[in-house]
Image (cartoon, rainbow, N blue to C red; front, side):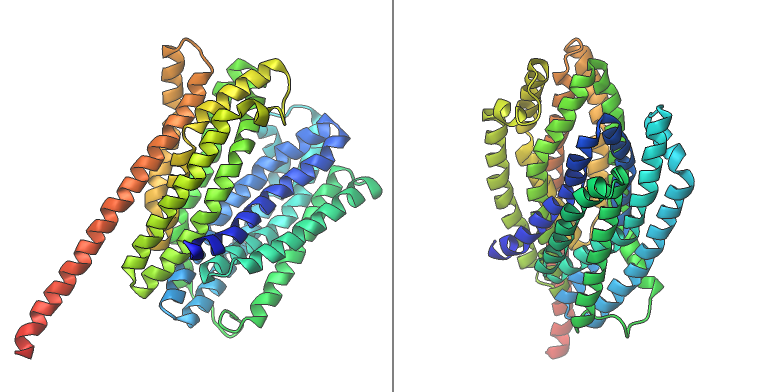
Length: 447
């Protein structure tokens, strides 16, 4: 438990820092007017999509690095880091080129019709898209270092990058008069700085310095294989969210705003549990690499205890203080009433969301990234038919949509943790059976 908390705290802080980038940019851009906010917000969809695509490499490298460290095979650590880094760098270049050539069409795809906003947003996307060339590598190094068991290094580097972003935003937006393009430039500069610092740190750390290691396609394939399921899951979540937004839009702009604000409040639970998920993945992966399956099980059990602490706390906060929390963002009576209802209903699922994330970390450390992805995609997709069925049953009550989200989260937590317990117990029985078989084969020879 102490190891988990020590490793997770910097990861949690790093997660909030990542979220703060968009928050800080939007805060400064907000003073430029609603058109500026619309332009930045429209481009933001594709920046979120880039984060989902980067997981094709970031998830796998964290798993393979932790396995190799557990087995004390540091040349493998270097090879996995270098091979995956080559792949994610090429992917970032391809993704950015797609943004350049299709930026106008991509903004129109979001549903923007105002030609001025389309022009501003597409230009903003072309500029901030440059940061993808660096952010992909930063996310990759962050995952690799957490796999090593070092969460402090990415925290320090990403914190410094955020400070640079905060300082440059007002200077470039207002002082230099670049407007929203200044916000994009500040993000590019801060991400570039972080990339430079990561490479400097890597060159100074002997057991992960990969300058003398050759690229291996086999290691890249292993990383991509582990990351493919989570990537499909995260990309599909984006499109499922669009489908849910279309359903929510039937209740007007207030309902859409309530859902957006509610998600931000919920993110406190998600970011906290997500930090522990990364820590569990690292410790579980090392235990698996060592062949210490008892420690692997204890890591999972500690994650469940942490889920109980975090989940119960946030459940009580959301259910007991919904109006206080929501009034920090929206104050009009109609939105406030909708927001209270949203937080109370989603409050019941907080514990199970924490259990889902902790169990996902255990599966990642085990190297079985496909199981959480399959469970997550299927049950998240189920929100759409569940919401439609409940809307029909409750005669167009908006709470039907909130309950569909809460019910699916509860189901994900119960099913995924149950699967882990069953599969891990079967795995242990198989190991014991193999050991007994070997001992029986050796016994007659020794006699």
